[in-house]
Length: 391
Image (cartoon, rainbow, N blue to C red; front, side, top):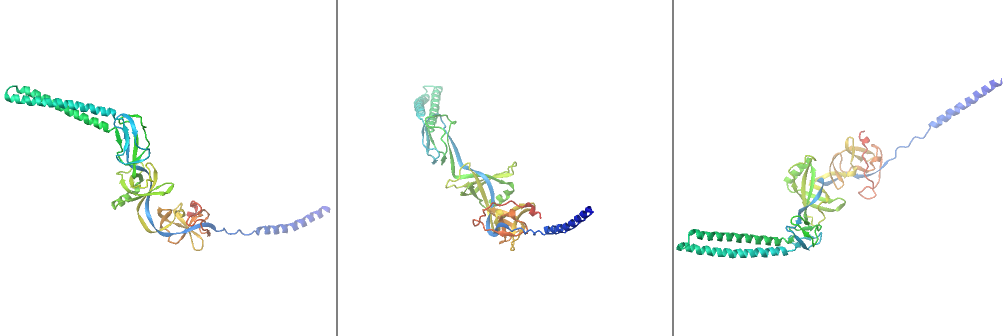
């Protein structure tokens, strides 16, 4: 009897608990709906129209327009150095002096031999003239007179050889004084005063002419036709900029186009000439070059950081008037001073996202933030959302 009562009591308790569980279960399902995604914080810039130069970019090195390695043409002791290392010199300026005593002695010796042989020659000529007269008078034979003529000719040949020896000795003496063959800047001194230098062997100094200065660089083969077409119409302007120092810029012209394409690299070599009046460019220096092929007038341009690359090509995020974002495929053109030409896909005045692309969802809302510095976003451009392009 007691067990039956306990059984019914349990049934009553279970029956009372079940509705409570159902009620609590129903309450737990009434969770607040999640709020919508907040607008992405971005920086935008308008597409504008500008005149943009059409450029070919290249990297190359500077070369001296003239370079001379100064060596001595004779051997001897270096008695004078008439310059400071690194200074500019003019053509004909004194550089070195070698000890001339040995060569002065050689000149005196050859001059003495010349004087002796001239005396012998004069005496032989007189003998020949006298014997020629005696032949006419029938006193001596013709053969005897011819012997004196031979002696006179031999003496004349000795005089000519002596004169050549004198000239050679004087030339050797002139080599004792070394002057600058070109105007330019001197390099490091390779031999100090007091050293004995060897003919055609010892390098004394190198002179580089750096005003004007040449540049050597290569461009891809596919741009050869543009270069040839531009050269046919006149001179091609080139701008040189030293990496890391944008204030150092020089303008020049293309002066040389190679006659063949390098089959190993698919490039062709060009040279340019720069006045380099301020001597900011230096031989051996790596320099960025911009070859100006023309101007693209009223081109639609956007900051280069607005351009993204996805699976289907390049695109930009366009902010519509309702603050939503649209993916817009574009065709880009030349780049100049941080601005990229948009050949197709944008109209002037449309707003494009230039910073915060990683937070943008196509079709989602955005909130436009002003850059900290006008015209330059504070953050680096974000990589493209390749997955979004495929949608």
